[in-house]
Image 1 (cartoon, protein in one colour):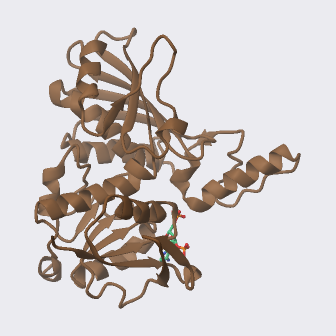
Image 2 (cartoon, rainbow, N blue to C red):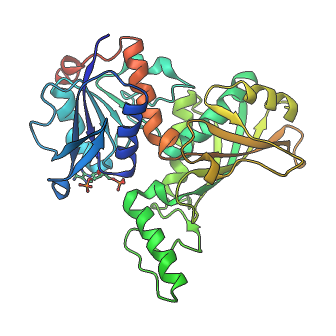
Image 3 (cartoon, rainbow, N blue to C red):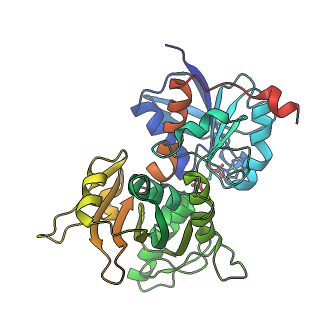
Length: 347
Ligand code: A2P
């Protein structure tokens, strides 16, 4: 079996570390693994397959001979390095928002639109985490009966803001329990024992960037440019795994029983419902799971064609690292892991 030279850009971050674990546990065919981060991490090592691998500061020569880059170092870092990596002959699966809405960049959720990855020109974008989780749950229903409108409320964990944000929330909790004033560096307000609306920039209509990502990215992934979505994104004091309350409107009544049967067999979904015990998906149980946990499926009492459902999914795993590794596995299985140097250079 062929093996590949892989680089992780942002290896020291929350998603980067998860990528390392997934490459190991899924026995990814590696010929070599290079760990890249900022100069701040020079000299650090990270464990992989029983060894300590060095972390290198990313630089001009980092991508020579690399087949695949898994990038999760933020949008500004991707904008600097992704094209350089492509020109060096690598394929980049980018977890940031830098290229997601670029018409030449496929935006891929393997359970939804795997075929779009075939047309990559060196960069494939991994969607926003809340968007991935919603897509995995809604797509199987949408295929049976097109969804016309989605109203979403999200309950997003600290992990979405990175490893340092998770530490900040823990420190805030300790400070509050000790009667001290919690410190805020990453988050704009204390998150421990609190919640606040997602603090990405607001547009003229009053929607934040995260909410607009759910709209625009889902439209692109579903190839439904007119799909109507309104989201309210909230950061909650959960360490890891996001949850979402979704109200779906279809063109005809969609029974909860039918939706349940479809989702029971849907790829990437695990149905979690015990109505007697009032037991449904929870972020604590979704943490570390590959599947999106979906439950509390019920017909909307306010609309004859509406359906309500609730989900929890590991933001670091399916919402980021796992989706990226699944895309890489797809590229290998379909023989689509081909450098696009020529195509990019000719632009
Ligand atoms: P570092 O640890 O050296 O700062 P998270 O999203 O969990 O905060 O992780 C962000 C990741 O992106 C980290 O691995 C971080 O490395 C990396 N990173 C941030 N800025 C840069 C940069 N300018 N160049 C390379 N890597 C970066």
